[in-house]
Amino acid sequence: ANDLDPSRRLYVVPYKEIQHKTCVVSSSSDDCDCGSNAPNDYGNADNQTNDGEDNIPFSSSEKDEKDLQAEAHFLCNRFETEWRICLKRASVDFDRAMKTFWGEVFDGVSSSRRRSRGRSLDDTAAASNGGGGQDEKKEHDRDNNGRNGFGGDDADADDDAIRGALPDAALQLYVSSVPSSQAQELFSFLKDIHATALINAEALRKLVKKFDKLHNQRQKRNRKQTQQRQNHGNVEKQQPQSYQYDMLSPTLLPEVYSSNFTMALASLEA
Image (cartoon, rainbow, N blue to C red; front, top):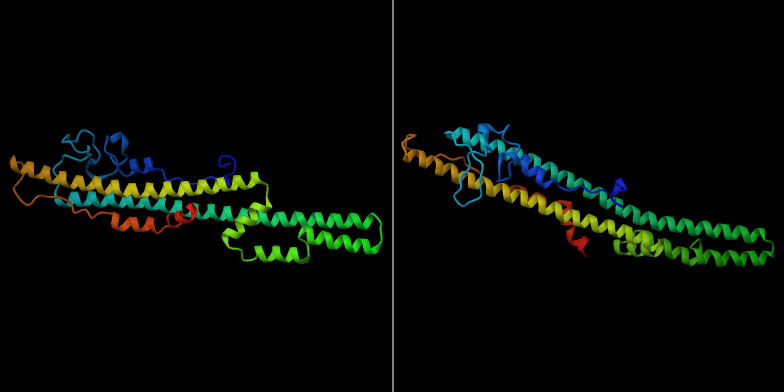
């Protein structure tokens, strides 16, 4: 259904693409688009160490403190921008999908009532044209109205049920008003919404986690390289140079945890 109906196509965070665009990778420069854009050729595959840790791309050029700070600032800003674009798209699409779902629920109930009322009017017209006494016509009208939800106590009860209906009540009315195949198709769409929300929440969380881990390791390696150059007399001995990198987790994770699709996971699972 999602392939056929554009309204049921759901946005999924492009996890691999964001990794490559923001250098949240640890294999080679082929996996990273930052090499041509970031300062000082960040992402050069020839400048990797093999000390048992993940291979972290870094530049071996002797950078001063300002270079490292500028590079860190560039990469953090780029990651935050791409990450927040994904968060916004996921949030907007989740809102659209849930409106589509509930719109179909209430439309299904309303359509069912309109069809019932139409049949009731047709039956009344047929009885009127078919002859018979006036008393028989009145009796037929009373029976039809009560049976088909067009007037009478049954109609009032139906109106009361749908008016201001809570979610569970609306779903029960929908299931009893439409064919089972239609109900199953809509609930399948709801399952897709839940699965996509879970995927997007996890993807955004893991991207932040990987970015923090990667750049924390880069900081340690820059310190190590500086110390090695100092020991070999390549640079004047001084305090180890390293950019100051503040983790993004405390800033970005609250944004994804408070998003509409993450907050709705519990209710969707119920």
